[in-house]
Length: 111
Image (cartoon, rainbow, N blue to C red; front, side, top):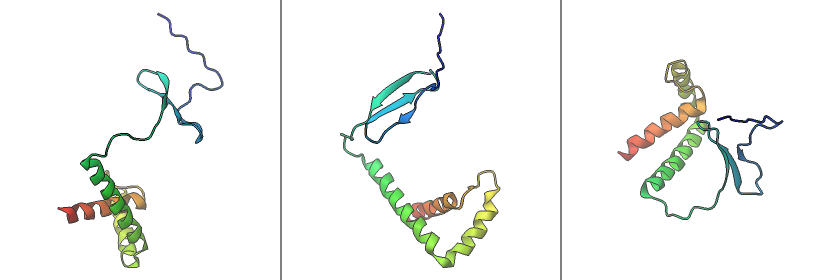
């Protein structure tokens, strides 16, 4: 069975095209299927796990913002960041490193 593939100036569209419309264009890499989906507001209640994840995210975000402004920790954070940056599992940006550190601090405080 043949598979005809027309390549016009635009091969395919992926993602939300306009803020005005709720239609999202999608493409599956594994099957090359293209389809549209209409996003709508959530109509199921949040699960306790989802609430906990959102609370953790908000808390860690606040910790990262506070740590960036804390002058007593900035120098040591820069030294620690540079020491781990070139390691195999090291974070490549300062922001990612601070999220890791603050996430660990939050998890330790919750246990």
